[in-house]
Structures are given as C-alpha cells and as structure tokens.
Image (cartoon, rainbow, N blue to C red; front, side, top):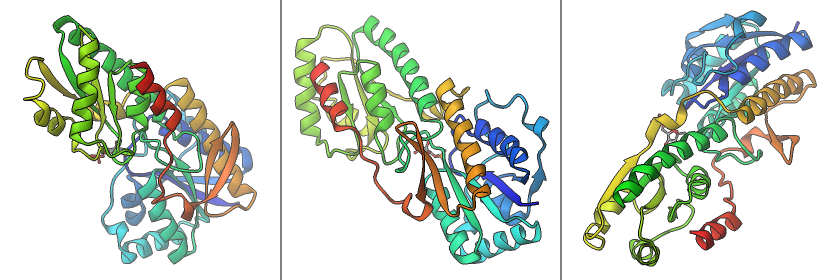
Length: 322
Ligand code: F6P
C-alpha cells in the first residue's frame, strides 16, 4: 500500500483543517495510507508522525487554525535540516508529502524534492492570496470577511465622531485583502503594495475626498504598502489634516482566525481531495489549484517568488466609486 504524509506550514489560514480532513478521508478512498506531521517542517525533522483515522478528523471542518499546528523552521532552511527530514520520511516509508501552506512552504518543499527525491504536492493556503496557479488560496475568503466586518464596526464609530481612520490590514507583499475589503466596506481610499503611492498622492486624494464629505472617512492600507504602513502614513499626514480627528487601527492577527467561510471549506475540501488523487494518478511536484472552477496543476517550482497580478479593473472601480 502506498504511504503519504501531510503537514501544514507557515502562517495558518482558516480552512487548513478542512484540507487535512479531505486528505485523510480521501486517502482511504484511494487505498492510500496517510500519516500526519505535527508542527510543519520542524516536526518533519523531529519525526513527529501520527497516523490519523477517518474519525480523528471529525468535527474539524468548521474550525480555524490547524490541528496539525504550524511552525517556521530555521533548520529546514539548511540542506542538513532537509536531509534529516528526508531521512525521517524514508524511515517512515513515505513516498509522497502533501504540504499545505504558502510561498515559503512551497520553496522548502521544492528543495526537499530536488535534494531528497521526495515527491511533494502543494495545496495553496494563505490569507494573503498571493500565489499564482489558483484563483484563490485557502483562508483568503474568510480573512476578507473578518476584515470587512471589523471595518464595518470601525465605520460606525468613525461616523459617530466624524473621524478620519487609517486602517491597516494584512498582506505582507500583496494587496488582495486591502483591495477587496476596501471595496466591500466603501473605503474612501485604498493603499496597495502593488502601486507606489507617494505621500503627496495620498494627501491630494484625501483632500479631494474630504472636501466632498461631511462624515467619516476610512483609508484602508495593506501592511506591505511601500509608504510604510498606517502608523507612518497617519503621522506624516497629521499636520495636513489637523482639523480632523485622526485614528489608526491595525487589524492584525484577528484576520487569520475564526471559522472558515463556506467558500473556504469547499475550496479546501476540493484541493485536499485533488492532491491525494494527483498522487494516486502518479503526478509529482505540482501545486493543485482551481482556476475558473477547473482543477489545475502548476509545477511546484514555478509557484513561489512570483507576483500574482491584482485586478486593475477593481482598482479603477474603487477610485471611481469612492
Ligand atoms: O502570510 C500571511 C500573513 O498573515 C501575512 O499577511 C503577515 O504579514 C504574516 O503572515 C504574519 O506572520 P507571523 O504571524 O509569523 O507574524
């Protein structure tokens, strides 16, 4: 019987548990034995394997976080660390490894495959949605809704006091969360890492917006924006807008938690099952994705260090409607 392993790595994303559940149950469907690794690549190096059965993944589809735990491993960044991980997998009789994570996770998996000859299959999971080869990553939809609900609440209090709020959302290198939550919450301005937005541009746009408005104003900023984030921007603009009561809100890790939305649960379930099916069909070193509702396979080595294009039509639309 074929034996595979699975792990979650990097920043957790709501829906990772749904993917783990689909892998465990999907493996049984294909007659494949599956072992779970705790604590990501760190657990792999330590040989932290555990055989999970059908009922071990009951009641997890609706839970955020990851029952397998996640970690960032410095040792796995070294060739020696990856050799130890390869040895553990061979000792355990594992023929393929399914990794659930983002850019850094896939970079590590590719090195493991190249150096240790382990077949690695990737499942895209990150709230940032910054991976090519799939329309959406697991966790993105949940994070969007979490951030939007938080911004709606800020709007209530901002309106009550007629304040100007600078709200920072997650997105280390990409502005997907900022763009879509900004549109969904009717933000007066959105600042994205994909565009170099100078302070003078922000000042000018805000002046226009504020002239036309009497109530609250919200500026949604991606944490990775090139001007330096919500705190820096608000401080730099303090003098220009001193007639306004300015506040900063950094939404932070609240965006990573919570029960996954239906869309994330279904996406994760499909990707988890497809990853096992890909191994059953003899595919190797690919990331499973969904584009236009079709399952796609992208060579894992082509998935990291790439910039996923933001939707410029949405950027233009946000400017027209603000
Ligand atoms: O990649 C997902 C993400 O949430 C980014 O948006 C954020 O910059 C980063 O992880 C934070 O990582 P950590 O929890 O390790 O500080």
